[in-house]
Length: 170
Image (cartoon, rainbow, N blue to C red; front, side, top):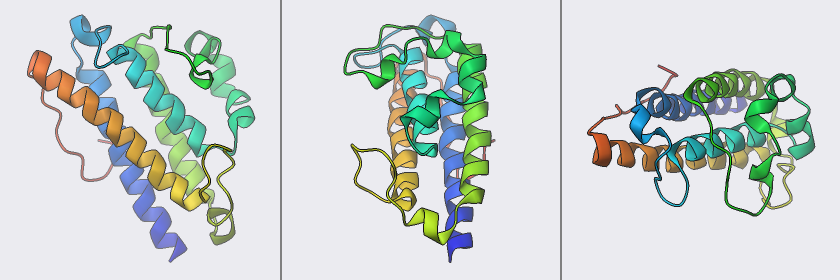
């Protein structure tokens, strides 16, 4: 059952990230820095990727120690996402596509390494009192929530339509 769970979660994680990636790819430049709610399109994309990345790990300190973060300090800057304040930093499309690809690869590796024991342990984030297994579902829902916001903005503002991803990255 654990292997089936991992396969299903990996497929749905890929579909969620694929949807978000398509939003990033297809967003017209004139909309990229425009608001979708109380933050810009590019900030919503970053926020979604940041927490996808975060929740694929064990804790916030591990997040900051990843090679990808050290190699891309211009993306992560002061880790404002970890503070209780409105985002200020803006992000370019190329960096967000690179981050999405990183999250996709990380998701497949991390999910594949899970065991029944690790899936049943606490998730490692003090603000979430759930298991690692439930954290994967929570993470997918978070990605889909924000992807839906981005899709709605694209449809309303530009008539760009994002196709439904049943599973898979592309």
